[in-house]
Length: 102
Image (cartoon, rainbow, N blue to C red; front, side, top):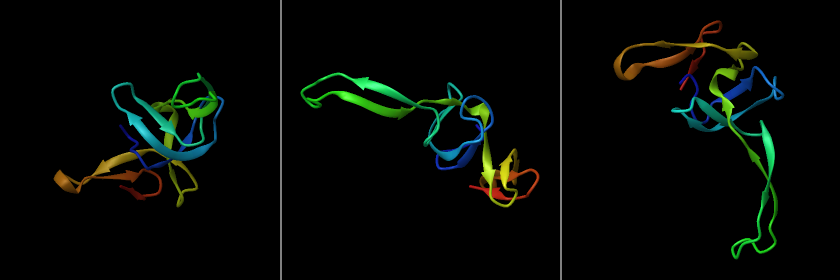
């Protein structure tokens, strides 16, 4: 997958288009990512012995990995990446700006 946990990304499509945030989790088998502060939904929690009052909780739900790009400060926008190097020295590099992401 072109994004990793901890990357800052920008959303390309959907209701959250243009928002930026940090990747909290990736789900490679489903090609999904959870981005901090993006695609937040309200979940109603039932009353339980651990949570006696119940209530509502705001949670981020996954976004398709194809709908996000890594944010580049140098370019000032989301950029596609390519792999450079061989073996253990591989690195992701932004195509228009040359910024290395690790």
